[in-house]
Image 1: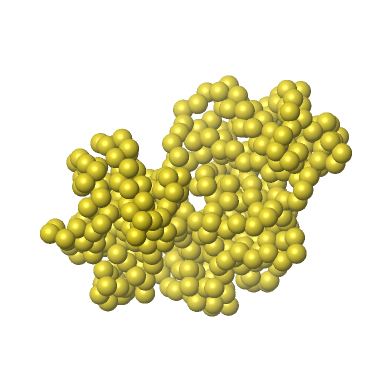
Image 2: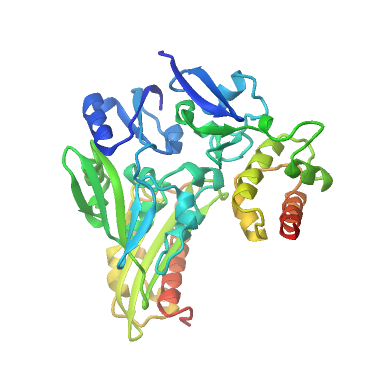
Length: 157
Length: 283
């Protein structure tokens, strides 16, 4: 199997990677240490492998690594920090919307792509934009509540 | 499907040259999401066409022109009078997939689960292809059956799709049943009707998912034409006509259940189309 080089901006830094043509973006990220991008269904259903590509949330399990060439990719490692969480992470914590936490990185990235595009989404808009992220613990109510509160806080600014 | 190599094309002519050069091993990829569900004995060379500027939606007179590289999310967000494909886009998997899947990918390779071919079969219009020869083909011809479809698209790059707007007195309905919102469709139906003076003057009905390739239900269309435009007419439609198709029940359904589900989906699609054609009320 041939190997080829691609480069893309990852969390604000231009990086070069050697890839296998058949490799998924998910495995490329994880073998390079970006393990906040989780393995899930591997068929574009659960959203736990979500990354942001050129401003849009995508499932890295059904994107080939070569498709990221010359693009801008954001993973959860580029969003907030342990002692300084992103406002979306803070909203989820404040609302008690995190239980096992496996879905949370994908959930945060889908929400970030949504708020970056529309800082004040309606409830219906939130449900459409977040329909690709499964959570098997919370029952979604607290997640949506966190998003709605964030939307309201943006309106009040 | 296994990808053994990849190349990028940034112009239509470049992609066409690459298709010729690579031959049967070439595999066009825009969004590429379906590639993970396709089985193939031979590994392929991917031609990434995502950099080709064939994206976006415009309206000229009564015709919508949709670039083949337009994502399903852009179709969902587009708003204009007479635009109905946003209803199909909303039922397409989930936001992450809508963000990367393209309409071109959804119709250039038709799988049983493909959403847009069923809708386009009733909306009609044309598709523009480049490749060995540049050609514009009517949707009704390109989607006549899977063999014709393969021939039309073989060695070609789809550039754009043109569909007419839905005007006053016309209606479009689209229904899809799946186990979860993300799951492949178990039954899809689409309907178009035109109503003049309370009478259905034109009707088109198509089904998908229960067959390997979407089909138009010409018998049912003929039954609808000339009848009074009210939802009660679906009670009199002869759904036994569906028996002539070799239906493929999905998700562990029995054949009887599959037929019943299909009947419900077709009826819903026709009722939605009638409701729109009658200005929101048809009872």
